[in-house]
Image (cartoon, rainbow, N blue to C red; front, side, top):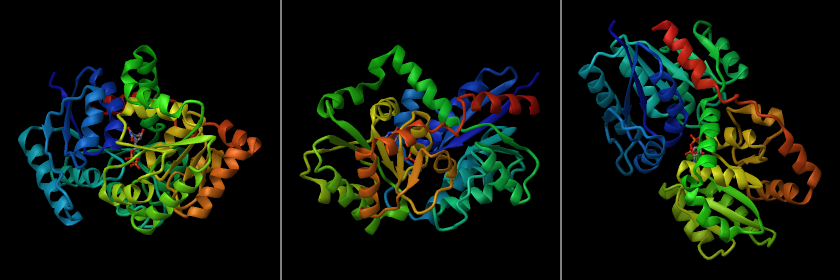
Length: 373
Ligand code: UDP
């Protein structure tokens, strides 16, 4: 029997986190051969996850270069992934989410009439410029894919509204699989999260406000407003701000300039995934504009303030665990202050349930793909 060869294409940290459970689940299926292609759209952050997940890519396009335009990135991705597909026979391609890598992976497969499965399908903000260009990236994958793994019923409904009715399956979000698997690994081997352990002493006895920010829409004025909010809240001595700073110069430069000498703001390099999972588990409040962190924090019962005007993940807001505060100093500080000073408001958010999945999403995806192979 010849095996069914599936190529999983990804390039950034969140894609790697959300796809390693799929790589693992598929690898156990008889008759399926899993191949991986990384574009390395984000080199350093991607490699951190590959290390922890133990994935050695079959193809590494190493496409990252400083300040490249979206045009150039897209063109290089398309010829790069296309060349991989021309090199070896592939029966199916899997892409995840809404990056340039995901869109181009789907396009390169389509140009060769290879079927495409889309993990985390159906997220929509309804605004093509928020998030930009991700909203259009994910919308353009939809008509190409024949499997749409929607994390929630809301996402499935969004696809149906666009006339996509075949191959839509509500599987949960694989980020919850990654989170549970990683928590279990840390419990068995605490040294895995050593990156957080070294910071723990420096925040001891204080409530941790964990901050991440990297959205392109927040670059410029938004970043300055976020930095100002962090500086203001860090004046309190009953908390410590833990801030793994995204390496994009649009983030680092502002944070260095505005938070440089703030002793209650622990600015650190991005944490490896297990260390970040530990930091999330220990955090009191999470302040973020990240997509993935918005999904992980509720799963751990952590109130999350989202520094965006809109979210394509309304489920956290509906469940009461997440609240939109925009990238506005006043709103961020007010949101944090309420959670810090009002125990009832805190308990209401910390109690909310998790709408993003039960940690079994990758198994469902593997079942569906194995059945179709
Ligand atoms: N993350 C990490 N280390 C950090 C910050 C975040 O491993 O220092 C993980 C986090 O757990 C989540 C993912 O990175 O799973 C989110 O990535 P990011 O915020 O870069 O992208 P987005 O989810 O917004 O696309």
